Structures are given as C-alpha cells and as structure tokens.
Image (cartoon, rainbow, N blue to C red; front, side, top):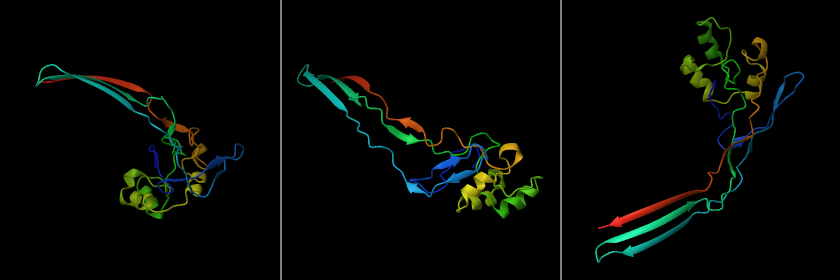
Length: 171
C-alpha cells in the first residue's frame, strides 16, 4: 500500500485488471494461479590441469553460464496501482479512519504511519476492487485510481550468457 508493490490476493495468485477508458471504473477477475514460462539455463565448464612438478599443479578453466543465451521472462509486474504517492491502492478500515481524523483526513484509507490500524487492514482480506474504485486520493480527489500501464507486463528476464575464465596454481 503506497509506493511499494503489494501482493493483494495471495502468493502465486493473479488477477486481471481492466479500466474503462470513459468512466474509469475498474473491474478485476477472480484470482487464479499464474506461473512464469519454463526456462532452461544451460551451463558448461571446461577445465585443463597441468602437473608442473609432483606437488604443484596449474589449471585453467572456462565456465559458460546460459550457454544458449536464452531470454525467458522470469517475472511480471505485479503492481496494479501506481507508485505515485497520491494514486495507490490501500486497504480501508474504520480503525484507519479513526486514526486519520487526528491528521485532519476524513478517510478510512490506511497509511503506513497509522501503525497497528494499518497492519490490521493490510494483513487481512479487503475488497481491493472497491478500494481501487473508491480511493480517497484517486483522480480529481476521489474515485478510481489510474491503473499502472506496466501491470501484467514482463518485468525481469533470464540473465544473458556470461563467460568466466579462471587460473589456479596449487603449490
């Protein structure tokens, strides 16, 4: 909630989020299990050892990680709200509303400084679709938040090929 990616439906679960371009109303799908595509990481190592004397040995080696240079997706962007501080998804509870009134904010939206009230809201299930559609800090001071344009897009990829050379001398 607020400037940090959140896992709002459970680890390994995903929701599809769409926003009507005319009304701004946000709809979400039922949570479902989503996995990244399978990927293969082929590593290869060559080593040559040479005995210099009976007790001394020199060796050379080369290690190729991701030899075939594959670039599979390893993570998707999981943040449906924006990192912009006035446009984020936050649980809403009466406990947070009681704390916020002391700050002059007339809202049940939970903020990290709300302390225990925030954690009570964040650690329990809440209606995230309603929170997205009725954010006290949404566009124009209330209403739907703007969905992050990078949500559900590939975020991290498999590392590219690397080559490591080594020399060892044992004496």
